[in-house]
Length: 320
Image (cartoon, one colour):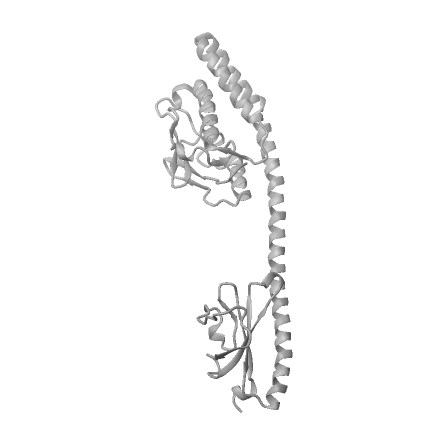
């Protein structure tokens, strides 16, 4: 006895987009439904079955809950014998069992997704804690007396040489420390804020180191100024460049900040004090953790013979 006599009923399941999820012919699974029914819901419609090539009675059944957008169609062969009716009853029971199993399977998949989301939330909380510790350590490092004494030493020299410049220096130093001490749970700042801090910080270093530093070069369009990058990132990179390289008047250190394909590119010339020194230290690790927390790709560090380059991708958020 062929399939059509032994199995006078079968069912089809499609998702909200018409993609086949369940069908007797496995080749159809994953393909988009090419049939169309003029009225919904489909009830007691006499149609020609594409599968058994005979007329069948087509009914539609609705899912409930999470999968309510999916569509279940049951096709029943019209020419039935008493055995066929009994067989349909058995198959209907089997269909119900399969339907329950399918629902349980989808619920299982949903539970897996919920577990993944929960693990991601926990991971984000760990990043938040780690980020808070990193920013706290960064704060302590910035108010370190060594940095303050260097700034005061530069100020003392200016007072005797150029009182007007000394006054400007005090204003810059106050702004820098105010930003160091400002609280912000996001760990982010706008590019406009970061560039302003970078210029003020570089001004202080230029007073201290003089002609061993070339003027800071900035080439950034106004359109990206409201976007975000990790807080203190530009200041950290400028500080690293000055700290890790030899400063010579005949070969002054050059630092540039420019915009390039959705990222800020911070580049400095290289003349390492110690050739084996790793210039990507604590500060760049802190920056990397912020990008990890916001799940933004594209943070990159490159080192060439003549240049040390750091790429800072823009972070797009509606608000802090």
